[in-house]
Length: 457
Image 1 (tube, rainbow, N blue to C red):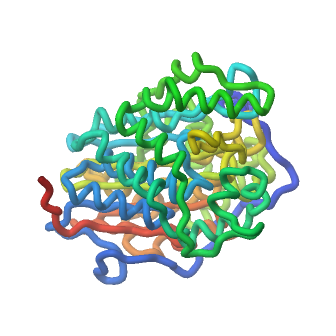
Image 2 (cartoon, rainbow, N blue to C red; image 1 turned 135 degrees about the vertical axis):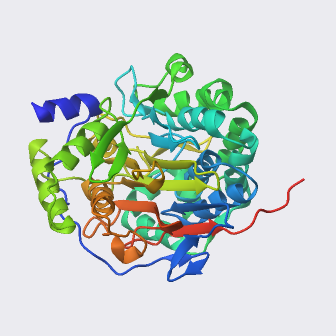
């Protein structure tokens, strides 16, 4: 019964025979530091914000926005659009996700913008990400929309060097890259992958981002870009259509709030598979030693949903931001597989997400943005797990530590995703007036801080 429920929420089927991910294991930290205080990226009283992401260019884009007086919502939107360029294996305009946002008054809202199954029943999903980030930034942003899209547009048009983390993921899925002309042109040369540090660009995507920058969500869901998506999807025989693209709307809902000890955790609500999975995981996790409790909780939860195995790369990533006013945003996004469907719309540069009914559609069940507050209502944790059950488990591990009064101020206070290399948890944690940005200790992400505003005209 529980399994049927999550399948109906996800509209997804499961893939058997792939590597199992039923444990969370410690790993040596691999972290880039922007402002080093006691070994971690920290926010002092004179700083204006923090950002954390699996991919370094995205974290830098987020802190650049914060330094210009942007809010956490502005930074999160900038990070997403940058990830769609610099980390397109896991984030893209063709995908979707879930964000939690806490305003400076302490209220927390949830934006659900998962990619949806097409009315045609085809292989490609109706994208949700642009609508979701547009709505969230419109409600909670402090800067003009154009500012948050511009960094990604610049990276796509002028080019960027392939980061270590992107090179790692490309090396595992070379066959997917090789089969798509647009991806192959960007990331391959003479039949082999371009090495880490090579400068690559996607000028078609830059033009699409320019339309989004100038016209907001309409620049993506209507007119030229929408037509490009329809034409590309027609190659699969069951295309998207202009009407369903124009009709897409993100959902603004109330998150689930669960109290644990002296803290309260906001997490995805019951309307999504992600909400069903994380609620069951928290319920199934006991109160003993955190790592053992999480391992046992994950096993029980996976068994309750009849999930024995999960594909090794679900094409997902998570990120978070916090600003000087206390606004916090945590987001997790997915393409339902590495590079989504593996098929791009050449004239718009957008890679189409796989339908949620595809095997990798289960990815959305493991999108775990979370915002944890203490008894005073102050944020003590804001972060996101993604990419598999271990990403969700890592977030609950951090929650258990905070509920027990333990610190989450060093990379070693987290647990990496162990044998699930592309499942991650990136967090911002606060305690005793000090906040730290902690990328997944088993990854190559970046936690970055802003120590002074940049003067702007």
